[in-house]
Length: 181
Image (cartoon, rainbow, N blue to C red; front, side, top):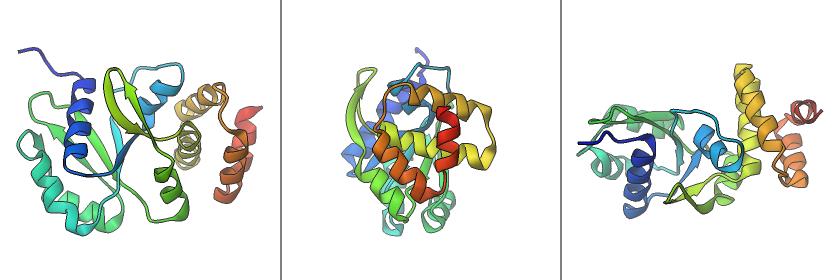
């Protein structure tokens, strides 16, 4: 049997989420590869809108083929944090980020778009919101890789007005301006 790739797992997870009626979006490095110059990544990061009452249905959606911890799912939903799905045969890991409750994260989720990526129909974060998220992540981690990703994305002509508005609201306008320089 051929081994499954990250794209195979992404396609499977996206289909299962859609079929089960969950709202989600691809984010992180794999989303960046859609918008800008691709770089090697083994990350699959998905943001999902989940409520406590969704836990059992989500677990049932994946437990046949993925390792999924009941406790981790429930805790992540309650804490608005994250948990992992691990495909049992390929050991590919998917980070599931529970959508935060603040105004920006709701706005970001509403702006997601449906695309076809490597033959897979799925929902993805907007380019501008990916830039803003990467700025927030880089602020928290100091990651040089995030800074390179942001510069790469800024070169693809994002909506500057939207970026400026939210960067100012989120307190990261100086970082954005420095990355543009």
